[in-house]
Length: 278
Length: 162
Image (cartoon, rainbow over all chains, first blue to last red; front, side, top):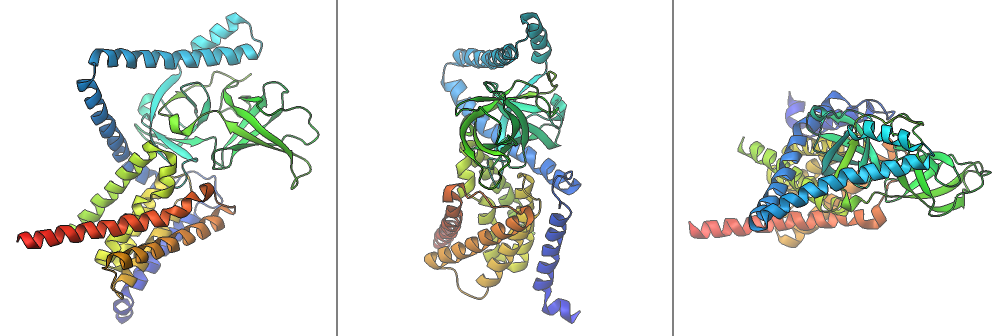
């Protein structure tokens, strides 16, 4: 008892520190499922985030709707929604055509693809590094689950859904996250590799052999569908630079600029069912 | 009990600020850490034990919105809360500039600890966002000391009114 009274605060600190260290240590090595505790905290606080964003957007739209031209606003929103779907369709069509499929097959794929898009709003970004994750305002009640591809309004790949997925909120791992990996192929020279994030504005195309020829700055990269997460043909980004990797004589060092723009992703499309790889 | 409720509301407020900052621009999230401001404020007000508990809570909430290792924020903010509460009980940190300096030192210590723990846990170098992240302690100190200054002004006005 005297020890507790004398060193109460230090013992409490030691207990709390041990608790946090325990939390950290059960996640090492990384890649394991998120703990129930972490998911519970996300479930508890994500509605707050959703409410805050909703309230701010609500206040903003109240101002706009009541003091602006209401009818025009509604029509505009409808048009935006239509453009959103149209953009997805056009992008998907272009990508499929690029794979030299017949028009009939393209239409068939498109019909199946269209019903599987869930538009969602971005309500938050990663609290430690904004290039890692975002939070969407749609969840399992809207048909969203883990490992679904997420595109921006122009059909550019943004990332994939990851756990935790709550009833009305979902976390998305961005392709710029350093633990993210997307199987891609370059549009012209057919270089295949894996795009990995660097937790910054740019990504890296890995596993392209130093002996592989081709590849030009500006060349577009598309998903291959081999990873069974991202449907084939989605636009990922373009090659920014190609260098010889001094640290590894086997592979080339290729920097990739993702197409999606962080500052402009307000609405995204979650592809709830893969359209099928090639 | 009232302080616990206040601390809980302040944590919600930090989530609110974090949500708004995330919507305004990703770089704002790099320089603005509302959770640290909350932990520093209540640690100075209520001491090291309260600070340590609040640090754990705020850090874990922050971690739950991040893909990073869950518990790193919890650990660093626990220590931040404890240090801030402990030091503020031994030296007078009420004057504005001293308060700002104190918060700056605490925030820098928190950042150093966060960088070290993250580097050990993830075994790779961190992204400093072109040095922008180094502004975070400065912004935290500025916001924290401003919060105290505003509070003091309100209290002074209240006591004059009474």
